[in-house]
Length: 221
Image (cartoon, rainbow, N blue to C red; front, top):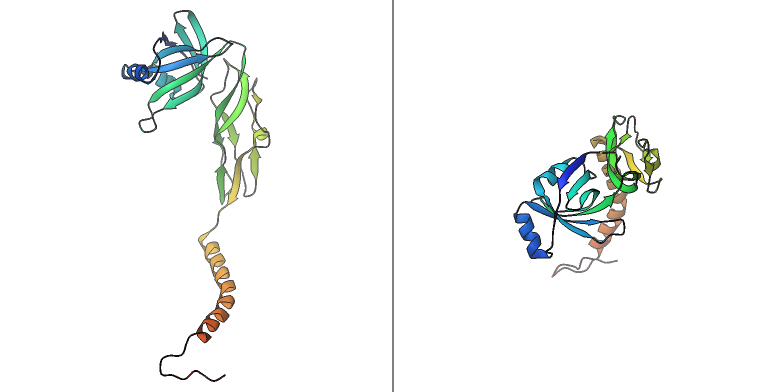
């Protein structure tokens, strides 16, 4: 995991107006929670914070505050839906040696068997680890994955000191068979053949129910 030192300035004004002014100044409104303390409000430098979170959403931040240094982890990150700029961040205070539960990205490694479509059903894994020793990601090998085969959370090899904190049977990735164009055409032809015998009697019945044209005598039974 990455560790970043960042200056945290105390905020005394709250609400939408002050938050907008903070962002216009190139800073991000932040709230620090944890350890039974009252929430503490800060503004963090936007550029430095963006760089810290660019490659690691669980970056360990060392906040340099008026009251001294405080370790913190991102809890909730709010971004502008269009520009993707940071709008707000909630932080949780942590200590060295403290266990925390976080979600880390899953990276697939290896190659699946030929004609296998890889369906990754979840992008993150929930783990518990030391707050100051969180992995940047976990790797899941799909080497030789075949259609019908799947890997679940308990199959993931976790780094030392890390434990799984979610349903061990949760499916991470599964292999699907690839349907060729010839197979697809054959299935469509088979479906059409099954429908054809059913459609013929229906068409005949429809013809029999057509009314006689004007000036023509109805056909005798």
